[in-house]
Image (cartoon, rainbow, N blue to C red):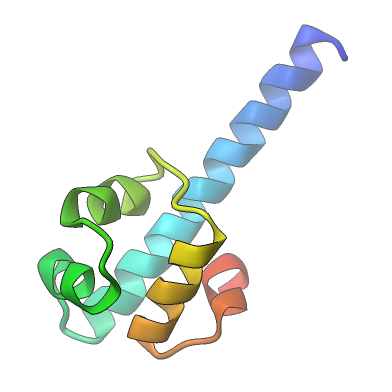
Length: 81
């Protein structure tokens, strides 16, 4: 795989993380929750929720399920809006 292709895939992945994080933030705010509230509901540290919402980290599938449950949505709604 060439460097340009690898770079493009990394950029696509980063854009996906930003989109998912933005949806989590939108859902959280629509429910009147703070990041601390969501952390308490999910067991995910508040700092990690902040980093996830800003597209800086990928929390993984098990945490995505925890977030979806706490936000009252199906997990796929986090990924596809």
